[in-house]
Length: 285
Image 1 (cartoon, rainbow, N blue to C red):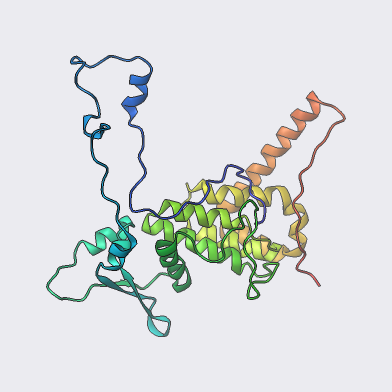
Image 2 (image 1 turned 180 degrees about the horizontal axis):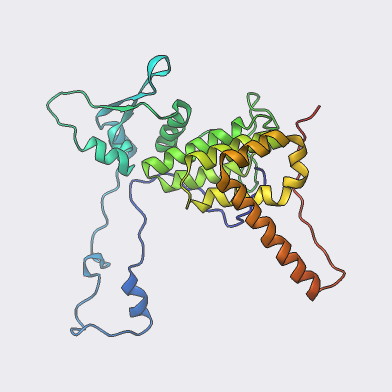
């Protein structure tokens, strides 16, 4: 999906041991001249005054000195054993809860992840240790770094699916920065109609109905290009609509909304028209 329909993609940022700080709801009222405290000497956030010492920085060496946790990913022949440092894993709320049950009596620190994708899990760990995962985005461009193992055009949707799986595993483990990074990489992939179908099927099967950050661009994409791309994957497109009626509904809603918007625009500005096209490689020989 080489072009995003949500132009305000949140830029990726490295993993950090500290969480984001949000303004409390009452702060806005105070800023607008709301009721002042009865005691003017009392500050609403006295514990965060300039005189308060900053929390000590956790060094990377301290992360590496933390206990090793064994991760058993997959089942049966697909089972893979990975290891990671606990202090890095607990940046994820999901792993923080899981690691809270460990004791220091020498018993194994082990977590089973039977339903998770091993490649996505590898990207998750790579992000924890480095703040990014392969392939990285080219600075200042909507492209990913080149590698001989990655084809220029994603014929099957495998590249899209890679980042989609990272997105869903980041959602599960509660890493918003990784979700944003994976989403931004999805829009750097140049795929085909059949590749987009495979990606759309995954999104509508494994993401929440109200997750518009990933579903809306998919529906928008097909709403604006289904009339041209459908010829390349007619059967796949029809099957997707039948398998996931919500997908068909989302696409149809956007087609009708766009039609109504175009009709209104033509009434206001007769004789003018505009179109925005996205380059697309055909999967047909």
